[in-house]
Amino acid sequence: MLGEKAAESRIIENAGPGDLDDSSNADGEHPEPTDEEWDTLRHVIDKIPVAALFVVVTEFCERFTYYGLSGPFQNYIQFPYDPSQHEQPGAIDGGHQMATGLTTFFQFFCYLTPIFGAIVADQYLGKVRAIIIFSLTYVVGLIILTCTSIPGAIRAGAALPGLIIAMIIIGVG
Image (cartoon, rainbow, N blue to C red; front, side, top):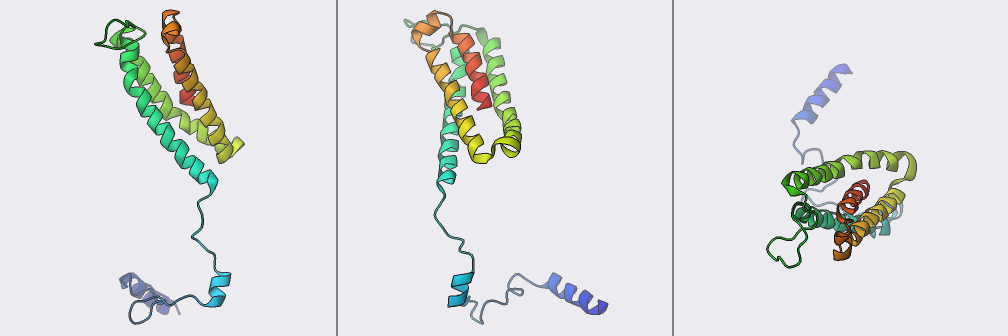
C-alpha cells in the first residue's frame, strides 16, 4: 500500500499539465455541461456588484487626485503668491526646504495611513463602510485645500494652515 502511494506520487510529479486533465476528450475539447450540472453548479460569471464598481471608480478618482495634487505642491509651497508674476506660480513662499519637507511628509503619510485604515476596516467598520467614510474624509480634505487656496484666503494667511490640515485629512482619507 505504501509503495503504491509512492509510485502514484512519482507519476503525478512527472506528469505534464495535459496529463492530469481527464475531463477533456481525445480532441482536447471539454464536454458541454449536462442539464443537471447547469442547475447544480455554481455560476461564476455574473454582473459586477455596485459596490465593486464604486470601489473601482473611487480608486481611480483617488489616484488621479493624489498625483494631480502632489505635483504642484512644491511650487505652491515654495514660491510667493504674486498674481502679476506669471513665471512661477506659488502661494506660501516657504522656500525649497519647507516645500520639500511638507511634500515628503504628505507622501509618507499617504502611504502609511492605509495600514491603519485596513485595521479599522477589518476590525470595526467593514470594507464598504470604511471605503465610504474614508472617501468622504478625502473629499473634506480636498474642500479645505480648495477653500484655503483661493486668492482671498491666501492673502489672509490661510494657505499654510489650510494646506497642512488638508494634507493630514487627505492622508487619513
